[in-house]
Each structure stands twice: as structure tokens, then as C-alpha cells.
Image 1 (cartoon, rainbow, N blue to C red):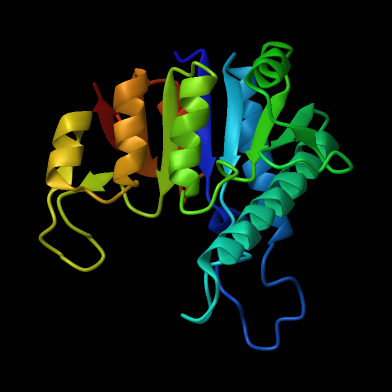
Image 2: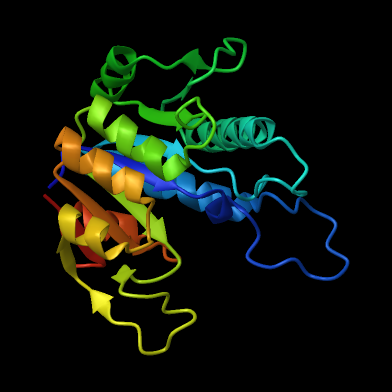
Length: 240
């Protein structure tokens, strides 16, 4: 059983699975999916796991919409998208009767707490879910790298990376029907082979800072995060 994890939650987890013609609701959030994500996170805490959630922002912002756009400003917009998602998940968790605190890499104290590792650890040790927004706070780094950074800072036992495939493959299984599944690999193997399920910089950071492992698994079923937390053999384990 894990004591403390960093869960990388994609923005797409919160969005409608498909947009029907004539759809009049939000195209960025599906209320039922937000509630399911919140419920799965709360269940993690009931297992005795301290949970930090690094939010993605892909349901709101996918990067530059023209090559002429300044990439720094585009990345700053993406950071703000992750804050919106963190606030949405916080509201759902609190509505379900559990405590949650949003920490941001940027100063915006009317909305959230400014991130500091010691404060985030204290919140987790006090039983609250910690929602980590704003990425690393810097352009040119993805939220995958943000998850690795926070895992190192917060002394997590593992990074949980939910994806739309079953784990790590030697090539993209959505494009190559002969892609080979990899159940276990070291950080060095993943880096040397250039496997793409997370940024190489994220694997490198976890290796250098001694994060014990990364679990990569399919999170189309949000209950899978509970199975992984119980150390079931699901998805791929990447370790030192």
C-alpha cells in the first residue's frame, strides 16, 4: 500500500466523452465525470493514502492555435486552465464532504494557496486532498514534468499517470496494432528507448531525485486508480 502519491489527472478526464449535435451544456466539463473523479480521489484517501493531484488543462486549452502565437503566453494560458480544473475538482470534493486545498505555482491568493512543499505536506498529513495547479509555474514544461517535480518535492512513493491506453508500449498502440505492451521497465530503459507515455524529462527527474516509481495505467475506468493504489498488477511499473 502506498502512503503518499501524486496522481496526474488529465483535463480530458473531466470533459464530456463526446459532444452530441445540438449539445447545449459545457464542452469543457461533464458534471458526472467531475463528480466521478472527485469520488475516486476521496476513495483513495479512505484507503489511507495521502493524495496530491497534479491537474492537466487539455479540456480547456491545447496550446497555440497559430504558429505566430507567442509560446510563452500560450503556456501561461495553459497554466490558468489547470487552475480552473483544480477549482472544479475542489468544489466537487468539498460538496461530497471531504476537505481539499488548491495550491498554485502562481500567486493568486483570492482563488488558491501559493504552493509551498511544507504547506502541501501538512495539508496531506491533515487528511486533505491537495490539488496542485499551474504546472511548474514556468513555460516549456508539461504537467507530466510538473507531476514528477511535485512527487520529488513532496516525497511521494509514486506518480500515478492515468492514460487512455493500458500502460507503456514500444510504440503507439492506437496507430500500430502490433505494438508490444511493456509491464515493467527501469527509468534508464524508458529514457534510452524514448518511450513516449510521459515526457522524458519527467522520467529523468524521477530517476535523479529518487522517486521510487511511476505507475502508468488506463484511467478510462476511474476505479483503476484504486486498484493500482492497492498494488494490483495493472498497467506498467517504471522504477529505478
